[in-house]
Image (cartoon, rainbow, N blue to C red; front, side, top):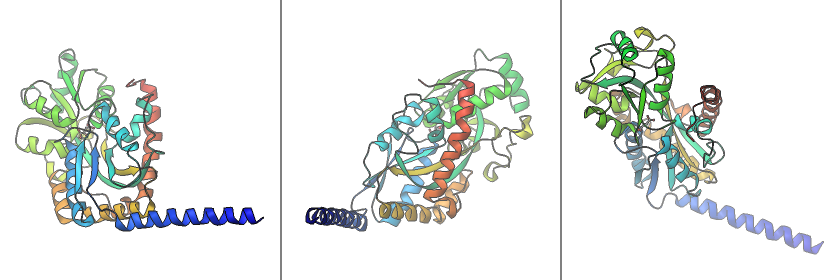
Length: 328
Ligand code: MLT
C-alpha cells in the first residue's frame, strides 16, 4: 500500500515537472528563430504565400521566421522532413492541397498527413490559371483545345511533381479534354515558369500567386482561371466554365502545420500569430494583387484545417485510385 502511494506520488511529481517544463517552454516560446519549410522550390506560389505570412508572423512572434525550401517528389520530401522534426515548435510546414493527395499517390509515403502533424490553421485558397508560352499559336481556349488534340505528341505540359497542384490540375484538364500530353516535372512551378519563359515547355496550370505578374507583363499567354468566379486582379480572363469546360474548378488551399507532439500552448501562440498575420493590411493587399485573399479568421484554426484535410483526403483518394496514377 505504502509502495503504491509513493509510486503515485512519484508519477504525479514527474507529470507536474513535465507539465511545468512544457509550460515554461511555451511561455518562453519562441526564444530563437522558427523555420517554415516550403516543400517546393523558391520563387514559386507556395514560397510566395509562405514568405508573406512569415514576414508578418515575425512581427507578431517577435522572433525571426525563416522560410526553407525543401522541394521534390510533389512536396512529400519537405513534408516528411517536418514530420520527423520533433514537436518543439521551431520547425513548421506550409503546404497545400498536395498534403491531401499524397496518401493515395505515394504508396510508400514516409509520413501520415493526419497523425504526424498538428494543424495550426488554413491560410488561403489560391485560384489557378491555364497559361502557355507566348509563342504557342492558340490565342484563346476555343483555339487551344483543337490545337492540343492535333499536336498532342509535341506539346509539353509542365508541373511541380506528382501530386502537386499543377500536376493535379493538368491531370483533371487532360482527362476533361480527353487528350494526354507529355508532362515535364520540376521542383516547383517557380523553375517551371523559368523554363516556360525560356520556351522549353508549352503549357501549365499554375496558381495566380505565381502567374499574375507574368500574365500582366505579357510574358505568357493566359487562357482561363480555374475558379467559378472571375479573379478581380485578372478580370479580363474567362473562367474554365465560360471557356467550354463546365464544372472545371480547382482552387489550391494552403495550411500551416507543426510536427506531432508540439505542446498546445505553443500551437495556440502559432495559431494566434497566423490569425494576426492574415489580418495584416500588407498581407491582405499583396494577396489581393496576386489574385487571392486570406481565409476568414474562423478557418485559420486547427479544427478547420483538420476537418478540411480529412475531407480532401476522402475526396481525392478515390479519384486518384480510379485514375490509377501512382508516384511510386
Ligand atoms: C509551388 O510552389 O511550386 C507549387 O505550389 C507547386 C504546385 O503544387 O504546383
